[in-house]
Image (tube, rainbow, N blue to C red):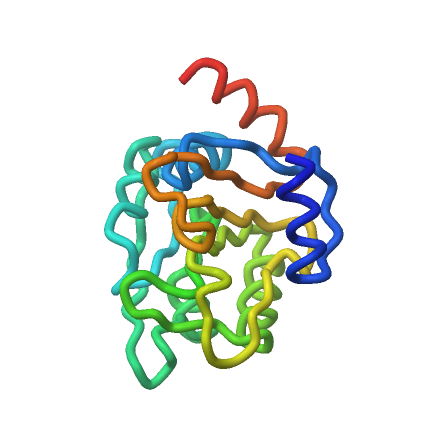
Length: 189
């Protein structure tokens, strides 16, 4: 946990407490824990389409409803504020993104990420961002969403950037209030 927190400081200049890092069996394990803590049956999570196909299953696993946002090349495969306004309702609790995205490879720029995060915050929701391909960016700026605050969740693992596929070692950097429930769940699953 300390080494992961230090890596965010070294690579991205982001200071995070090691206590906010939850070690998981891969990024899939992190997403299962996050959904289990955040989503109750019937609650909604907004997801991009196209997007990583398993994300909707993590939402469904806890009885939640995944809501697809159709994204396209003209918006760099990123949801727009208008889409969020149309899709978000009193039953929506989170927006899940990936940057760089699987399968499109699109990268969300700082300005767009800040706008999306501001919208989610204004609705009392939480942003979950998968950064598993972070660091594998060859053009443009490489940054972590963690620089925007401590009220969002970042998912990552050692498999892609660190070239350790098959080790099934991942993590979530979560808000402090989520860490204890995630740790307790991890002990039981």
